[in-house]
Each structure stands twice: as structure tokens, then as C-alpha cells.
Image 1 (cartoon, rainbow, N blue to C red):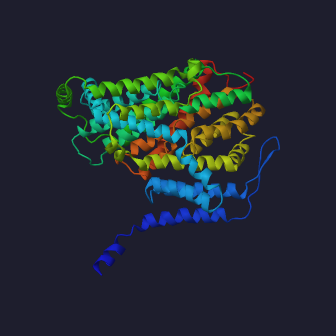
Image 2: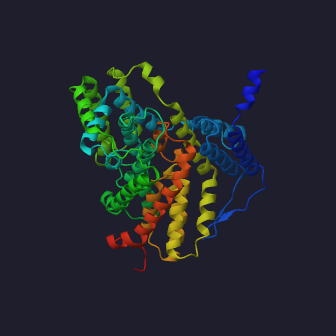
Image 3: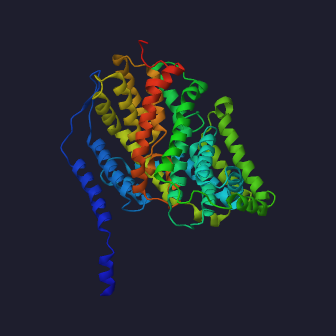
Length: 489
């Protein structure tokens, strides 16, 4: 009897409320009457089919469950696949094949690199060396971590950077003296890493796949090339302005409880000395990961490497970790499958919105509202749409659904096509609201320092900062740097 009473008392009614809210949103949208077509400026109709309406229904349920974490985030992802199959929105094969697409396997391989760096002790060594340099002030520790994260994303994928930096942050946080307890410093350290990884990744084509895909897509539509260096020229100041503003943001919202960690520099120096010389496994891990990174960096310039998918290259590292004995079968049990499932579900809902036409319907309806607006308002509406969509679906898909419509409307408002491309790339790189928006967000969540609700809540002011910086770039910075913003000027 007492067990039954305590069971009833332990029901989380708030969580149950959000669970049923997600179900109610799904039901209302899925069984609602037919919605009107979206019509672009050329008069082309984009109907919302039954399957597309179903995709929107799943999208709303998943978004609600992810934000309020009514069940583990990986389980919400499973629900995305199940709902598509059960309500005949897409075939089960399509819905669940997305759970193992190359992008998901890339995240798996990146996480394995992080686990190897932790197991071999490389992250402790790097953490101690960094703390000797930045010193004992927590504000400088923030800055040091953020600068290293942003800089690394210029030469390697931000997913791999996050997986590499994450265990380093765990080592640093262990010296803060609060154990596993949640603190402002812990939240700022891990959420900050995720945000800054996004900011740094927009600067070069090596930071994320979205850049190369968007440039290829832009060439097909507009017929002109944007070079590697042209992209970096315009993106470098925006990425670094965001990185330093985010440092200020975290010093305000997550001001560390301790201004200084007394004796930290000496302790880090002593711990580093205790590690001794590099071990065989540390050297092997560094060589394997270094070779994979160099190979991926050379891909655009070496013709025989170009056809090879980046995921295949980075997965070679996982295979070599086991061949060389750095990892064994027991290490497979420490992989955070909750995080990998989260991204699998994100890929599934993203492709569902794309393939059913629901994403195009949303993009056309949104952008057509601004077809007679002031040019600046129109450009910022694109930035806002991509920023919101990239929190739910692949950033490449967010760009792909908005660019065609935006590039059709732009000439009527005298807006140059370049500014539309760059605005989309800036906001696509920084999803600050949901964990599914980018792999670094999900990797940071594994620290257990924050909830999905906290991430969403603090992502709102961070997204406002992003929109302000984007507006500044469009109106002031890029014109000064030589970007044509208006076709008449």
C-alpha cells in the first residue's frame, strides 16, 4: 500500500503536462482540415499534403518534448521515427534509415575521438598546460577555453572540436573544487563551448559541411563562385565578434562563483609534471587523429581525396583505435548513445520536413510576408527564419529551403545575392536554442551541468545578440569590407 502511495506522489505533473501538450499539438495539426497552399512571388503553388502536415505535427511534438525533456532526449528521437511509420508520413525504411546516415556516424566517430583523448590522458595534459598559461582567474579560464575552441573550428569540423574540447573542460572543471555539483561556472564552461564552436565554425569551409554545400548550391542558382578566402574575409570578423561577445554574455549570465581558484596554476604545473613523458597510446592517438584531420583539410585541394566522404575518413580513426589496442570492447559501453540517438532523430525529422514539402511550405509562407518590406527587414527576416529552422533541422537543409525563395524575391527589393548567402550562413552556424541544432550542443549536454530547458532559456538572449551582430554586419561591417549589399550601389 505504501509503495502505491509513494508511486503516486512521485508523478511529475509538470512533465506529464508537457508530454500531453506535445501529443495534443500533434493531434490538432495532424487531424486538422486541409491548409491553404503557399504561393511564391512567381505564382508557383506549394501545397501542404497530408504527409507534409503530418511532418509538421511530428515536428511540434518533438520540439515540445526536447525543450521540456519529458522523456530522455534519445527516446524523443525514437518517437520521431515511430510516428512517421505509424501515421504513414514516410515509410519506416526512410524514417529509420536516417538514424544511421553519414552525418550521425560522423558524430559517433567524433565522440570516439573525445573518449580516446580522455582515456589516454591527452586531455588532462592539454588542460593542465592551458591552465598554466591562462592562470587562476575564472574569467580568463572562460576566455582561454573559448578562444581555443573557436580557433580549432577554423581547421577542423566543429563536431570533432567539441568532442576533443569536452573532456578537456571536464578536466578543468574537476579542479574547480565542486565535484559533480551544478554551478554557474560549469554551465558557462560547457554551454559556452557549444556556442563558441558554432561562432568559430562559420569562418572557414573546414568548420562545418554547411559552408561548402551552401556555396555549391549558390553557384547553381546564381551562377557565380564564392572562393574559400572570400568566405573567410567576410566571416572572420563576424565569427570573432560573436566569440568575444559570448564571453561577455557568459560573464554576465554565468558569472563564476569564484573569481579566482587559488593555487590553480601551481597545481596544474604539478599535475602536468606527474603525468611524465608522452605514453605510447598518447602518441598513437595523436598521430591517428592528426592524420584524419590533415586528410579532411586536404580534401578540397587533392583530386583523388575529393570523392571520399568525410565520415569514412574520420571513422578510420575509430577502427584504428581498436586495431592498435588503445580502446577495447568495454569502451563501447561508455559511448553516450542518448546523444547519438538525439542526432539520429534530428536527421529523421529534418529529412521528413524536406521530403514531404513541409519545409518549403513554411519557407515560402514566411518569406513572402516580407516581399514588399524594406530591404533590411527582408534580409533580417531570412536571418531569423534560418536561425529558427537550424535549431530543428540540419543547417544545410535550413539554407537549402530558404535560399531559393529569398534569391527570387531579392532582385525586386534591390538586394544583392551575396548578402543573402552570407546572412544565411552566419545564422545557420549558431543554433543556440535546442540541443538538436548542432552536435556541440548535444556533446556539452553530456556534462549534466544544465537541462534542455535552461539551454533553451539562455539561448533566447544569445540569439538576440546573434541577430544584432548579423544586422550590424549587413548594415555597416560588410559594406565597409566591400560586399555589395544593394544591387544599385
